[in-house]
Image (cartoon, rainbow over all chains, first blue to last red; front, side, top):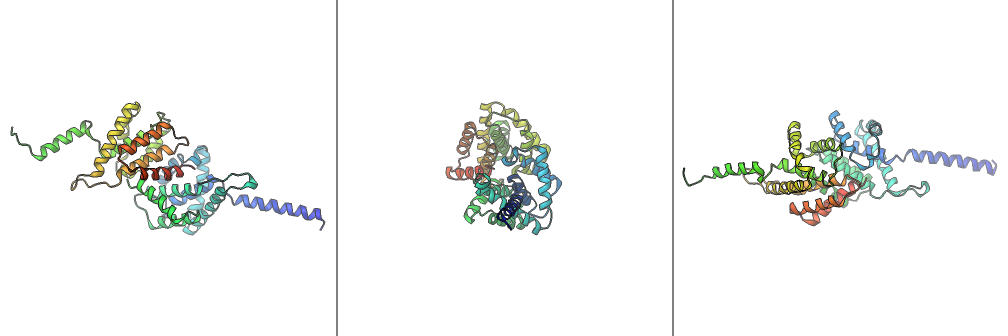
Length: 172
Length: 168
């Protein structure tokens, strides 16, 4: 194969790798929505009323504020498919979303995306807030939050501090 | 009429005084602080009432109230929110009522440990949901710390965690 041919193949491969890599780096909106819906479904089920309430709360989250109602609902429907299954499937999708959030947090100079400092902690804190607002925090929800803190690389002490502060808030 | 008063007479008097502005029920006090936070920047967006309903539906203190009663209390509080001075006076009274409820009156009314911190954290969450926190809102939170007799370090920890949460 000529040098030009090899170069052409390499650039085709690079393109494919880049495209695949982009597919696995979800937008911050999609990744955060998956994590939050994962928290809502952490105890295994969610009812229509809870989802309506979730929609109202999501409106107040800064990441989703810029989206139209239609875009938010579309995002929610797409994430719902990912989390409304078995525990294993849900946790796998949530972990994938966490990978996206960690990549966004680091930023990518090649793609000119600046680091989003603190997005992982923000996602964890929003998830804690959703879980603690329920009257009773189940063992499944505790397990979910433990898994989330690991997937988002939040140290044990920091995770404890966040859960304590949001626990104080949701005591009443 | 006898000159000697029984304890029950005082209870009756307290109930009458409470009805006329001396103190608020803990649920009303909680809701007053949350609505005070929402109006702290002297701006009210039209969708805020819907959002407030969704929020108060999830606050444990207010969860036990039937929806109609929650709405009724919100409507009772709303007129006090439009005027800044009236609103701040109302919030101050609410804080005092929260401290009373936190202390409790055992054995009939158990102490509600952490009530003041909880309402402060809820108020922070409402204020930090906005991307831009105004000086009026910061001042509202400073005053809340004072009126709820909160430890400044604990209050700062709550502000930091809730601020970080709402950064995205």
